[in-house]
Amino acid sequence: MQVHAGGALVREAVVTKLRQAGILVAAAADTVVVAAGGTIDEALNACPATLRAAGHRLIVAADTLNPGGVLRAFRAGARILLQTPETTPAQFGAAVHSAVNGESRLPYGLLVRLLSGGAELSMPVGVHPVAPLTERQLTVLTLMADGHGNADIARKLSCSEHTVKNVIYELMARLQVRNRAHAVAHAVRAGLI
Image (cartoon, rainbow, N blue to C red; front, side, top):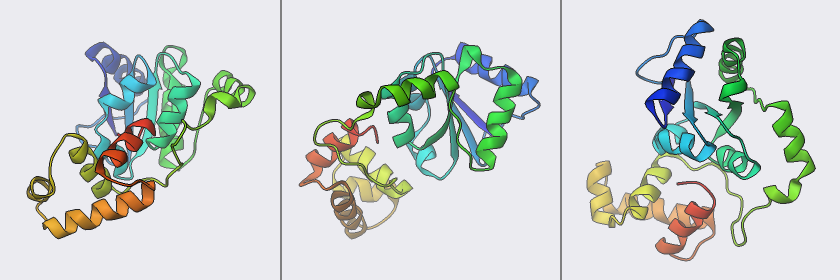
C-alpha cells in the first residue's frame, strides 16, 4: 500500500495511523493507494492521475469532506473516504481491508449530508457522466492539457502518432466533445484531470 499526501505532516499523520493498525506502507503501490490532504482536492492532487486510473483501490483521507469534493473523488476512482482527524487507527485499518475487498465506505455524517442535499451532487452544466478512463486515455488527456501535440505525446508514450490519434478519437467519443480544447475543458470540469 502506498500513501500520497499534500504535505509532510498530513502524510506522517496518515502513515502513523496505518502503522498503528498494523498496515505496512510501501514505496510502490500494490492494490491500495491512500491519497491524503487537508481537503479532498488537495488529496487528489497529491496522488498521480495515472496511479488513480491504473486500477488501484483509492482511499481518500481529508481533514474536511464536502459534497462537491466527494463527487470529484468518486469520479477520480475513490471508493472510500475518511475524515482524517476523526478516523482512528482501527478504522484506517478496516478501510484498507475494505478497499482490498472492493468495498466502499463513507462516514455516516457525510452520507446523511449527501442524501439530504442531492442538489449539491448534480453534474456541472454541460458535463455528462462518463465511464472511468483507461490509464492511456488519462495520460493522453493530461498531456493534451499540458499543451503537447500528437508527435510529442507519441514520443513520451513510445507509440506511433496514429495510436495517439486513435486514443484521442476514443476520448472525444467517450466524453462526447467536439475537439481537443473541449475535451480538456470537459475533463477539468468533470474532475478527471
